Image 1 (spheres, rainbow, N blue to C red):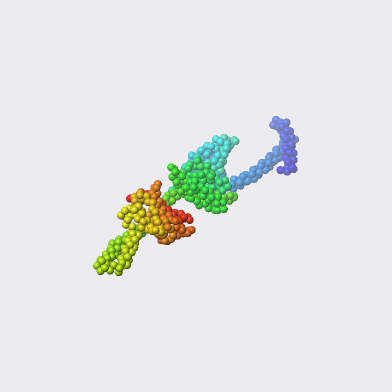
Image 2: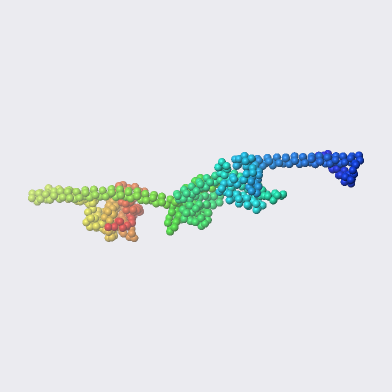
Length: 536
């Protein structure tokens, strides 16, 4: 309203006041006949009231215009709001709804107005909805509830409602102003996430797999319940640090794990195995695999899994033992076959060739005595004696019958005596309890000593050798030492078929072989456990 209109209204107001003041002092009703002056006065007064009514009518029009403008703004905001708005009376009947609310319920505005809002509430949420209304009615603050709606077409949606109750100033009735947000998509995503998490939990539980994270900056460690169970600790007892995690590991593995973790500064993956001591000092093998995860805001952390691989390790060890047993069985069968073949050849030489040679010599001696041809048969007898001696030596080397006839101790001493010469002396120190060893083990030891003595004669240029066999503290120790030139550096890992045969027999006995090479000669020491199965 401008200044001219304001001054005009003020003038009209004062004029109206003056006129009305005058008319109050006149008593026109007492007069039966009005004079022209009275009529003029009445007309003037009527004109004043007319002006007043016109002014008030203009003001009322301006107020309605402003109200319509404000209402248009409110309606625009109300209908275009991104959330659904409803106004309910104290009985829950819909008095007003914005366009988003109408679209949410998938119904026309005419249909929803004056309709009970409870008809859109899913039966499972009736109690929650009435509690929501009750809280609004008895509380001045905004109230919130999650309510499930069931539309007329049967569709179910999840909503979050926020509202408050407002009392009418004139009437004591309560109205509920409610904003509704559709959270169906978020709820479905949460449900999918929950189902995925449950499936992951079941998978981790079934596979005995745990998860972990390590913050690269703070070195804080998080272990889930499965990881704690795998490590055999309670989540409350773990301090959540890398140091605390390493402290749970076997002392022999802590340094390697530390070195691996320190080495991951420039790496993207973690892949390591370690041991932990479980209940009753039961050692468990744990495999840990992880990957670096980059954070968009900056920084990174490692996340991964823990797996109990104790059973897998046990199966691997059993497989290795099985392979070793198979190799030992094959090697043992090979050596047994060799010994059987040697025994057959030895028996053939002893029972056949030697007997024929003895027969030939006896016939020649008979011819020599009868014909007095001593000089002619002297060389023949010498050759036959040499042939008999070499045949007996071959037979002895193939199968030492002295082991069967007199025992292990006597057999070793007899071999030393047979092999010794004036240029090569062999001394023996044999524990008498060695006769209690299994015959197959005795044969293995005899063959190893025999091969080592042959090496002393052929390669070492030795003049003296010592053979000792001791049984002490559950161990069998075999030592062959000489005063020869020893082994060239690095040659202990080489050697021919003789050394290879010795190593095979040591392997079958689960033993160890050591070569002690010095300027005073070579000492070969073979040790293995004197287990019950090695005794007769």
